[in-house]
Structures are given as structure tokens and as C-alpha cells.
Length: 518
Ligand code: FAD
Ligand code: SIN
Image (tube, rainbow, N blue to C red; front, side, top):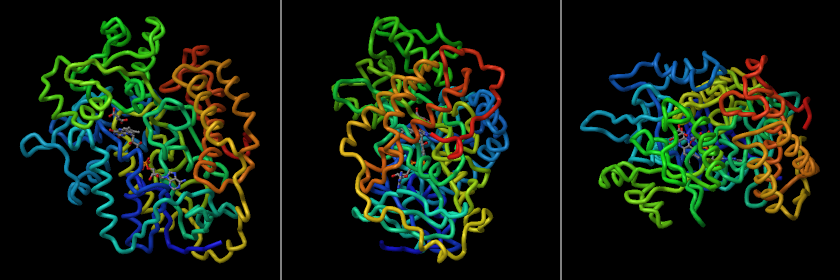
């Protein structure tokens, strides 16, 4: 088995991983490992924008309050304070590094999204904000000699002994190698691919959460999954996101009878919190026996639509939907997971030398429901903090990785299952049908039983990306299902039709680790 040694290992090259790498580089060599091309990430596809209290009409305190309100009582207030207070500096710095946000004249332009009480969402090239962040961060990374990159390489497991992490096993060119590092940062993003309807790219298979769980890390808030109300629903079209900013700019949701319905569900109508809009859409779909509803922007001037949402306009056109003239067929899809690897405010986990940042992590900043456009900001703020903490070695780790060299997994391993694609598809369907937008005790225990039939996969080793992802998707699906079964109440993104109130113990967070067993 090939061994590589670096000072710092970053797994993932989205906003959180890249921002962490930049911070680490002043203190030693950094290796950024990523399982596809470097840009392939949720970050790259982020549309609406990045929320930050920088406009003349806004204040950090108002951003704080909006985030807390969206989190439905479960945000960790200190984490939110860090996010909103440090956010403006991280954005200013990004602009200095070359990120170009849209402007009105010389001033930054801010849009409105659901549950924001101010226009505070910065955007780039209309609806391609994530692409611009990824471009600016990657070009900064490429200008730093201490950072090297290893694309098409997938982290399979962590190298951990006595609760100290000394790096990771990486599958590269079909061969497993070991990367030893003094500190390792997980920045592997979310787990949307565990659901059959998702806005997430193919790389979002929950790898970091599953890897950390196997290594003994604590995971928290796994029951809280956010479903985005509006993903394209058209024959043979991808589940392409239609940004909330469209509703912020006046788009109206209509049912299959072409009637607006959101004001019957919430006083803020189209701009109600995401979970409420998603459930309202499901109710309308059931009531009208339809597979989708519509998003209608046709009352807006066509030049404005093309200018403001160029990527959406051209993508929809490819599937014969002209958004300047046609109502867009949409239905909800899994979008973001609020839970993840439990960390402190510096990204430190309960394993020494292991940090996590971005969507894979759970600082508690989003509580039970994330405020729109807070996650790119989270990646910048907490990627920076995790990088800074790992560079100074505050969470222990190991200066000397020699002792770990006997640690060899994966020797002579072969893929443990032949029907990988079929099993992935079963997991995704079970999760969407039984652990989706509306859950109940019966659906959750059916899901648990079905997923448990595949538990032998958890003990298998895999030597392909799809195989490794399958095992991770199963692990994460079981964790989500278990936490959703334990939480007997409805709060934020977690809605149970058999417990529609919060329940007496709603403030209690659910933490899972290996000792709870799967
Ligand atoms: P990602 O950007 O997903 O990066 C994860 C990285 O880890 C990738 O490079 C991936 O290849 C790599 N990786 C994963 N597993 C492994 C492995 N095993 N080994 C090696 N590498 C691995 N948020 C907002 O704030 N504003 C928005 O407008 C917005 N729009 C969105 C639109 C879409 C379509 C989607 C899907 C999400 C959107 N979000 C938005 C959410 C936001 O984009 C993500 O939460 C955020 O980008 C996550 O950043 P990250 O760095 O944590 O992970
Ligand atoms: C969107 O543009 O609607 C997505 C924003 C987000 O997920 O934060």
C-alpha cells in the first residue's frame, strides 16, 4: 500500500474545504483530496446566493434573529453569533481575492429569500453564485505553493487509533493508499443522494458522516433534513433546483388548476419557511391528485427574467420550458442536512486531530431548519475556523504518525456486493417514500426494517467509488431513520404526522455514535 505524508489533509474541495486549506497553508503542507474533478460539489451548483449582513438596511443582529427564528428554537446561539459576526469579513476577503458579486451601479446587489426580513443575499452572475465562489477559492488555492490537490481520489476511512486521527485511507486509481497527516479536516458536504429526489450532485453521498461515524465520532441532529420546495419536475429532466430567489423576485406557486395556494397555508405565502412551503406543495399535490405544482414568473418582464436567472432560463429551455412564457413544473426534493459530525465552534470533533466543516458538520448553527443561503457563509466562516484551529493543533492530533503505520485496512479487499446500483436505488426510494417530507412511526419502522435487510453491507469493504458510496449511503440513511424515529415531535425540517406538536422533550438534541449501534 502506498503511503503519502502531509502536514494537513483536507477531504473535499467545496467552499468549506478550500477555505480551510487556505488557512492551513501558512503552517505547513496541505493536501486537498477530492473524489471527482475539484469543482464538483454542492458549492458549484449553489444558485440563490450567500446571506451576509452587509447592506445599508441590514444589521448583524437582524441576521442573527432571522437565523434563530428559522432554526425553530434549536440553533446554538453562540454558533449563530459567530456566523453572522464573522461573515462580513469572510465575504470582504473573498472579494479581495477576486470574487465578483452582482452590483447595482457600484453597490453590491442584495436579493430576498424566504424567512429573511431584509434583502441580504449576495449573488453572482444572477443565479450562479456557488460557481463564482468555487472559482475564486480555487484560484486562490492554486496560487499557494503549500497546497497540493488530489482529484478523483475518494476517502474510504480514517486512520484512527486510541481516539487519535492520523489521516485517511484514500482510493486512488483503483488502489488504496494511506495519507498520514497531523490533522485531518472533513469537508465532504451533504447526503442528499440518499433520497431519490434531490437537488444535490452525485458526490453528495454522506461519505464524511459515515466515515466519521465508523471512526467513533459523534453525530448530531441527523433527523433534520431540509427539503427544497422547488426542483424541476419534467420528463427526462434532472432534478434541477429553481432558486428560492425566484420567489423572492415575485414568482408564484400554483396548483394543477393554475390557482395560487400559498396564502392559504402561511401569511408570508411564497416566502414562508421552506418546510412549510414543501409541505403545502405536498398537500396540494395530494388534494389535486397531481405529481407536481407550478412556479410562475411569467408576469415579470422577459428581459428581467433572462438577466436575473440566466442559468435557470437556459437549463429549462433545454427541456422545452421557456420560463418567460411557461409555468415551470416543480416538486420538492431533499436539499440539505442540518445534522452531521458534531463539532465545537472551531470544527473540532470528539476525535483528536479530526475536524469537520461545512455541510458534513453540525455546529448547531442551523438548528432544526437552515435559513436560506446561510450555508455558503457557514462554509466560509467555519472552514476558516477549522483551518485555523487545525493549524495551531488545538484539538491534539499527532505530530508523529509513525505509530500508526501498522494500521492497515483494505488489504486484498474486493467489492462486497455485485448489485450496487440496485441497492443504491432501493435505499434512495425507501428514504424518499418513508423518511421524506412527512414521516410517521409506521413509515419510519418500515424504512428501518427495509434498510436493516442490507446491514451486512456495513461490515463489507469496497474497492470502488460506487461501492464505498453505497455503504456510506446506507450508514447515513440508518442514522437519519433512527434519529427521526427517536424524535417524537415535529420541529423545523422534521415533521411527523403522528406527533404534530413539538413534544415535551423537543429541546433535547439527538446524538448518535458507534456505541448506540446501528
Ligand atoms: P460541498 O460543496 O458539497 O463539497 C464537498 C466536497 O467533498 C466535494 O468536493 C466532493 O467531491 C468531496 N467529497 C465528498 N465525499 C468525498 C470523499 N469520500 N472523498 C473525497 N472527497 C469527497 N447554499 C447557500 O448558502 N446558498 C445557495 O444559493 C445554495 N444553493 C444551493 C443549490 C443547490 C443545487 C445545492 C445542492 C445546494 C445549495 N446550497 C446553497 C447549499 C450549499 O451549496 C452547500 O451546503 C454547501 O455548498 C456545502 O459546502 P461544502 O464545502 O460543505 O460541501
Ligand atoms: C436557493 O437558491 O433556493 C437555495 C438556497 C439555499 O439552499 O440556501
